[in-house]
Image: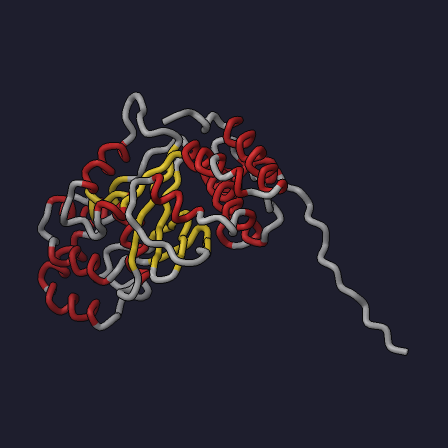
Length: 292
């Protein structure tokens, strides 16, 4: 008689970062390349970890509230007019390069101060001079799709997006903040900021057959002194030339996400109600429940 041995996965050994996560600390993503560096792992272990909060909130919505239209509801809370069809997929810490339009824009503005005074221009003046002298040639290389690897005509690398939400014909790029401000400036463009980079990453992933939206999630909306995203969100919502429409630029606080979920209690089963309570305790311990 032949007996087949059952193989069982080894029990998860809790790490220091586990206490920062509300759920699913045993997910393979935490043993993968995203947190392979010591710096990223130490940040995840910190009480101020944005990654931990991002995972805890969006993973909870994805895993335990799939029966609720949470993506549609939250975007309405964020002031967006977006049609969401079906249950969204949720991906964390996605890397994506800029779209072709952004790479071409950089070549078309090589004489702008934001580029000529950038760190890249100061460190590699010969490269800048070559690009300025051969702009048309390098533009053709980009249009031909020759943008992979360390090629000299590509002046912006990939961006890291905290969360990507995908529904039918819709891609949403999420930038999540706790206490930090937005990163401003890139190697070849002193005026480049994190919102614009994340939006462009979403556009690159969506191609041309999907709608694209952006969602900023922060601790609160008003800070003293102000955080830079307060003025940037206002600027982009009034800028008709920004790549996505004003009603596709959403802004929520962590507390607003919780309060939306709290209002769904009548539609929740007992286990979901328990998760709402746990989320309240998790965000409350981080002082993220305040009215905004």
